[in-house]
Image (tube, rainbow, N blue to C red):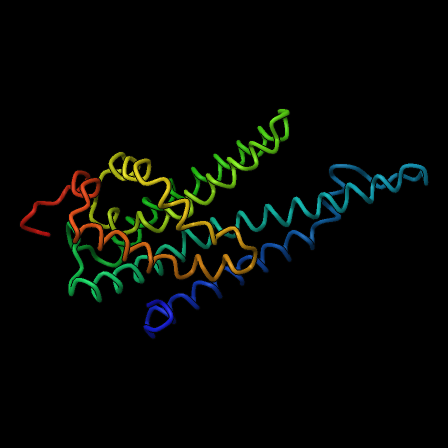
Length: 239
């Protein structure tokens, strides 16, 4: 549906372009100040015996900074730009499937913008912090391979939830109920987000993920899924 519907295709492509531009800008900015950052950590040694170690640290620092720039770029683009595009894609999908958009109350554009940011900040920052904590645990403990698997599965689930949570968040479901819905559908989210681990292509899959996520939520509601019905805060007359 995302590729066959012109509006959804356009919004998905815009999201890809925004993420790529911000990532390139952040990476370029970090690489420009790479030498200054390296000099702050370790000045270039004069001894030829250890200069090879300095070059190794330089390369490692570059990789770490590029990874950091990718994470920061994702957070900035997600919170300030992508969440608006994701919500619009979710709205278009819901209207195409049900004929209307079900939401608790009408908001102005500005109210909607700040509402979406408030919803997205915990969805975007908590997963990043959790994944970083798990990664650090993998480095500091002898259970590195096991922690790596757990970290990857956690990243997949939380990235998928960032999309499936769009519709219930728009309907003003409390955060606790929405998180409980996540914990009750972990296997679905794991399967939904498995493609997000493919480098480069994950940008494409993430850009159109709101379409599939909205289809999942709306169709589960229409078929009377018990977990979704129990977590719904809407009156049956509105559904």
